[in-house]
Image (tube, rainbow, N blue to C red):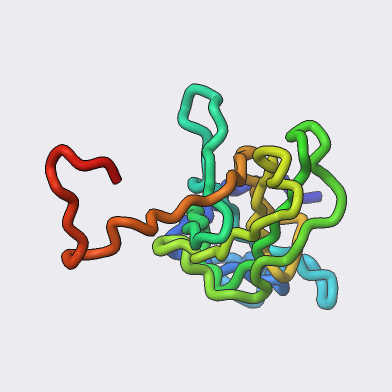
Length: 178
């Protein structure tokens, strides 16, 4: 009977390629014919990325972000591991306590652009007429959607658009009311 030895393997986030078909091979340094591969095919293990959504996020004091409806908002996240695509979803509810169930797809199989973010055209939910709507977004690994991160809850609020003044041709006289 042999001695059990363990080896701690650091998966460097900058260098580690994610995989759904990973295996480990160990070999004697003096005699490569003395080796073992685990797990046996087709019982591979996975090396998966990890995600942390950085925007939207609360203000650090626990106050949820406020995002205007009908505008593009940059969803941002960090990724650990070399990963090429992600799926993005969102959930909405009138109260943050009731968020749950199936999410709505924002993008599936989109490039993992965590450094630049993803420009999400924020929907204008019908519920917004009665006040802000509580929302959260999720980023997932397409090959295994149990690998995910959820944003903090945030509020989608009615948007506003300045319609006047509308450019350099507009003049407002001092002392006038506009």
